[in-house]
Image: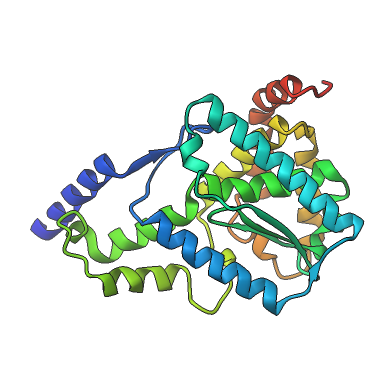
Length: 268
């Protein structure tokens, strides 16, 4: 009981000194990890992933991925600048690539390293559908979900020792490697359902700020669900809320998203 109490007090203290608030959703999360180390690892893994796969360039689809991605990136940068938090994105080095794969998947590593698989394009159908995907994945990076997952693992494994600064470099490295296994795709880190729900909400707002119609989100997610019926659930959906909950949440968030869309010049 005494040890549990001490670890609980340590967690409270950690929350007080390392709590990060998402400026778009207002959600707070514990983020203890060193972002520069995460970004270095992500960049290395991204290069490895591209070198082992087939990167599609010069095609209409490849250009769409870059164009839609850059619009969402620019919308995020404008928003963060408008609230005085441009520094949050200063270390980002954005890349948007289309990879040849039948998987219904897309991902964004910490620091803005994005990949879209060709297999998901028939489901996105158009730029609005693609914006749903890219807004969602970019949101994982902007919200610091990778850092949050690492931090959760650190607290679970070492508890209050983190607060006392008694964690060795090798122990920190061990946590990094469990959450981001070396030699595998960092991007396939599994997020929790709360993080996935936040990425749904934040992504809806970002695509709207970029001038894409957020009403495209519901038919897109319905198509994703239909595409995965009868088959092994794709990574893209593996830890998401159930379809009914997701659609309900999107409907709640749509009025605010439509305000962003209208401000960006969209027609209601």
